[in-house]
Image 1 (tube, rainbow, N blue to C red):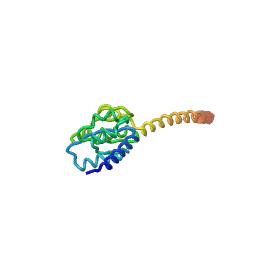
Image 2: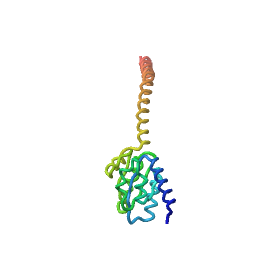
Image 3: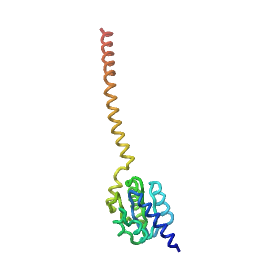
Image 4: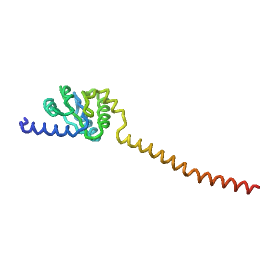
Length: 175
């Protein structure tokens, strides 16, 4: 049995972790096997997220006074919280895909992204967005494409000039 001090330490740790995060997802599970739990935790770690199964009373106390307080009504039954300090799109993709693939074990309760409570449809919409890295790569491609076009146009003048001179030289040889 946990002592009062240990419970307070757990509460303080969870409060600090959630205070530093950008988004969190609340899930529930039943009939969960150890292998599915390990697979879920592994995928969340790969996405840069943290995951913890929490007691509902501790979770309600931990989110008090934070942007996650609006989601406290979803702390009923078996509750697990996944949160990230990084891009919320990656967490949304990981959660929505895993919950969809393992609907018999996991159910999505709610999520909080940038201080707003979202439901499963909104999480799936967020998951369909490209991640921050993908957006940056697309932006760099667009910028690079313009530079390539500029270089092609600049190189076209001397190339065309050489082509015209070659054609004139070929015409003189024929004559």
